[in-house]
Image 1 (cartoon, rainbow, N blue to C red):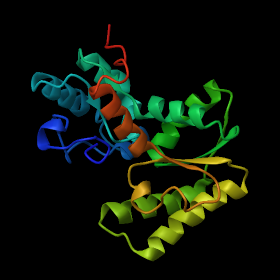
Image 2 (image 1 turned 90 degrees about the vertical axis):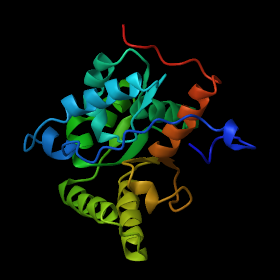
Image 3 (image 1 turned 60 degrees about the vertical axis):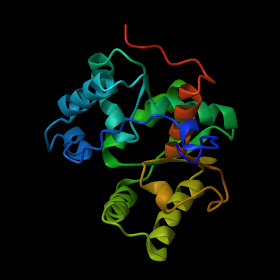
Length: 216
């Protein structure tokens, strides 16, 4: 957000209120039915941010959007969906109908991007079970602080496997992915959902775009 904001001084930047809460229950385990739901904690975070003065809410976690309804129900200010914003970028690019997905297990199980793509008459191209297992290992390595070349090569390999299966565009649908895989690393376009959300946040906050509808 800071990098995308045109600013000549401190005062030109956005007022950000951040609730960075590492105690939110594991979204992947919850969606798989092997852990507690994070819905109540996410809703509480939304209420805290609104009370602190937030005029819109953004959540840079794709998988946690499985609980978007609970977040929207908890707040009266607009919630910007990383899924919806990324889909808008897919439409804007118009790079074919077969869309590769690099998403965490919970996001995949919840079908967040799959449903959104099918609704647009686009075809999701997902990792198979073994590839998904490897992908999750890479994600947790990144969470643990690794950024080495071997890890980046392994992530690129998974993306290339999606392309080999017909993907014409790949969505980096997990915030860890763009830490090691970037646009230009693949022969086909890569959409960084985190960057898309950050750009949308700036556009909404600067009132370059009308705010999404707030909960009824």
